[in-house]
Length: 213
Image (cartoon, rainbow, N blue to C red; front, side, top):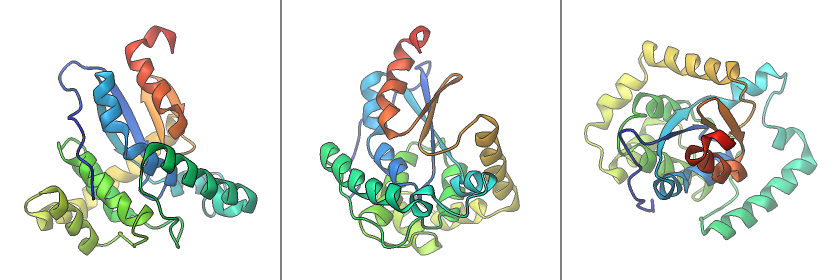
């Protein structure tokens, strides 16, 4: 199900930071297209998972604003249909939203520099936003590993669940808050922040013309 994409640029290529949450519907839209778009722009993607729910709780919100605000939620689901159709991305509204994603977040943090991280993230997100499945368990993560050809998934999961890696995810989420992130997806090019799937192209343009950001 996961669509192959061109490899992102490496070495001294400009970098775009992709801050995302697996349970975020607009993060899904960006995750499905960012590697191919970045390759076309000649830049590389740095995958930065964080726990968006913790950011929301710091605002006093118990859950996503798309749930708290009924009219906004109704609009967002219609918008997702349009945007996925426009981009040629498969879509099915999840019956549970937002879904828990702690294990995938911990795995993605641990393996953020691996060449298969983009394919892994796309496969996990498709479980949620195409197949309408829970994915916050070892069985689902192993399935994603198998799909992208990763060996010894049990060892990776064990390291992902270590206290040290759990602390790293908390630290990365704290970093997101400290840098002013309030939603997902968020992109950084240097110190320039771009929020929302609809700003991905602007962020990629900034990697080429930093002086105009």
